[in-house]
Length: 198
Image 1 (cartoon, rainbow, N blue to C red):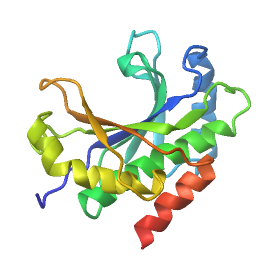
Image 2 (cartoon, rainbow, N blue to C red; image 1 turned 30 degrees about the vertical axis):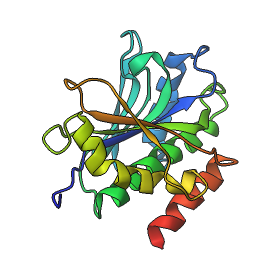
Image 3 (tube, rainbow, N blue to C red; image 1 turned 90 degrees about the vertical axis):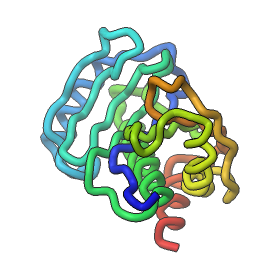
């Protein structure tokens, strides 16, 4: 598989997903656009879907990336979606998307107006949003699961975590990984970035 997809997402779940004030994100994301440089890439707009059950929540729309506090699957989490311009192997691309989700989570953790927007580091979902490259089948898990596990190893004491395939064949390929849990966001990001350089 040499033509790796650019559309990949990663989602870290909120530690307290039951007490979410989604509208409070809207001014936070607008301020990120105004300030610039809070997250990587060009950020363009804010989209509010928090009223949609199990929907995409509140989204920060960008040229290269979309970020959100997402409610898909009934669990709130910080989501990052790459849209274009990813380089490297599949493992490197997954690591880049996971790192971006952690960077967005870190930025939200610094916002006092959304104290509930704090992620746990013991679980992550990774989705390959290219059904031609990776249909949601056991064969895809066998073929590309090891690459995803390798990307997540820095968040799992250096070992590739086991992956649980999520959803059915009508949905994009998605896996959920249980992780050892880094001590904090800074350590998690440092571990991912160090592995990308190595």
